[in-house]
Length: 145
Image (cartoon, rainbow, N blue to C red):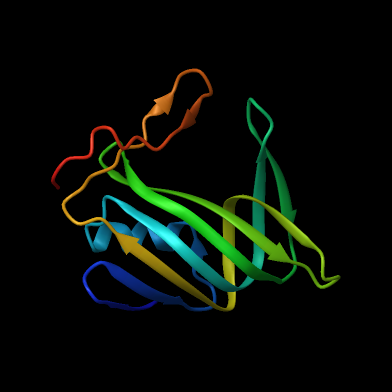
């Protein structure tokens, strides 16, 4: 992974074989990012798994062939004392169709480029929402890191 930053924005270039969202979790941990947003993500995923929340669980869709990552957005927060990443993706298939959903996993193909913005001095949490069973972004407790 290559990274550069101006203090609040980070540009990342992931290399073939890196795993999402693991690489982003590792990046956030190494750079002590506890409040951030993934604004842009483009590139290619060799394989991927998307999820559709059906009200009780993620119904997975596995793509076992390369797909263009045409859009990636999400957030970075903290859960259980470590970085927590929530990502949604739109992928273009070889048939020029788009599939989308919660990014459960993905292996970088030729490359992946990400723009992440951070909120210095803030810590966002991601507690479990008892009504849905999902970890939700909680900004109410934003506090200095």
